[in-house]
Image 1 (cartoon, rainbow, N blue to C red):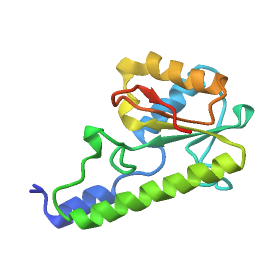
Image 2 (cartoon, rainbow, N blue to C red):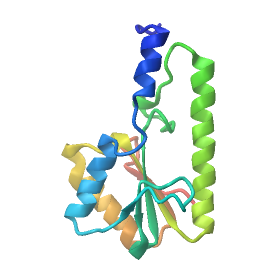
Image 3 (cartoon, rainbow, N blue to C red):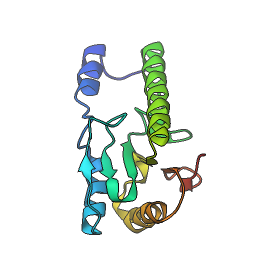
Image 4 (tube, rainbow, N blue to C red):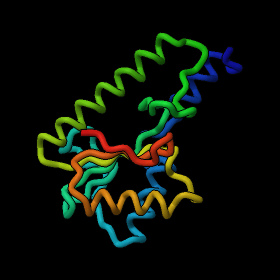
Length: 155
């Protein structure tokens, strides 16, 4: 049972930012300190990626585990109330993400998804090494997250 009233829950959820989130700022800081330069939220690209690194032909999405349904992540559990609404909302987010990733790949971009659960100060060196490995490699799509495999490559 949700301990908040529907009005309180609605106010909490509507206050969640979709740009410049703490995990996104964390990744941006790592990248900038390491000498990588990027642009932000380019509206001409599918999904308006959080970071765009044209030099590496790469876009980066920093996804919230709840909002984008990070599989097997404890932060991605649905609320106990209004389950049908949340199931539909999250499912549509995931479907939109898949389409955006596919469209970006078709346009020749490489796609890196960083899950918010992997954006922890104690893991900064691991996260940066995984980002750098992707940027210097040949993979077209990669997800970085702390669940079971720290990094899983899809496609």
